[in-house]
Length: 172
Image (tube, rainbow, N blue to C red; front, side, top):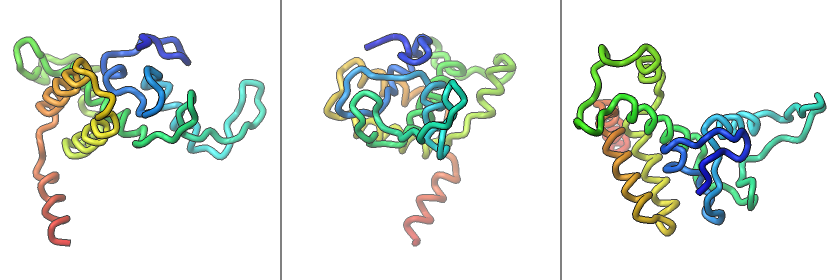
């Protein structure tokens, strides 16, 4: 697996390797989170501006290598990557404890505050990712996903709102 993003040449993080792009036909093709975010943003515009200032046709979200549609939303991949990055910052795997807010830097506190995922949304994205890759899972990735789920599971404990959503679905 490549260690650099093929677009911007930045080194991919552990979370970016773990939660790779969900193409089921291409092996070892991945972008960094910043480039995936730009890819998504470009797909929302009717046209995009080229480097020479001309307007080009809209970008469609598909694998850039084989052009197949992704079997899951790329926003879910970004959510999983952000959960993994946040968990690796605020969870000390050596001691098995979470850092107190008083032990975090200002940038870590901002990242924790700005994280927009609930336990339920991250859990659903993780389950979808595992289902997409169930036939391509190797022992190393499987172990990495289990460890990641434990870490962000501690960071994002289930809330009362998650339980209420389940109750609403049962009633309706």
